[in-house]
Image (cartoon, rainbow, N blue to C red):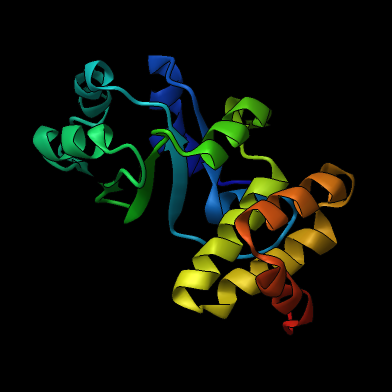
Length: 188
């Protein structure tokens, strides 16, 4: 399961604001049963201009490094690939915020995210199929085998939380069959 510290630092404030979001990336990989380390959390957040001041205020402490409001507003205005980072300085933990925008894969995952309890707090977790597809897309861009190892481990550990037909459909839509085959062959 994800670290309760990451949840307290980054997810609890988003829950308090009532923003729709889901956790993905390394923390979601851990939640699906894969033992690994990560130094932060990746969040896809449904965020509009009006919510930006409240979000930044939630991290308005000397303990956090946050981008200027203008930068966050600019990222929020992007139809796709909007992104900004918040860092908790004392712990060096970070949160990568990806703005939902009009990305259909993000929208698909938001509609299917599921609530899990971590340290007594609600956390909305991305579907395993989404995490796999995003990691395959990251592999395509970076060629980092870490993403392939994560995919292979999720395939192995996620069990009944993984819908093979849905995964096959998403992989086909994104043209990721070759990358999925590579993940199935990579050494753990």
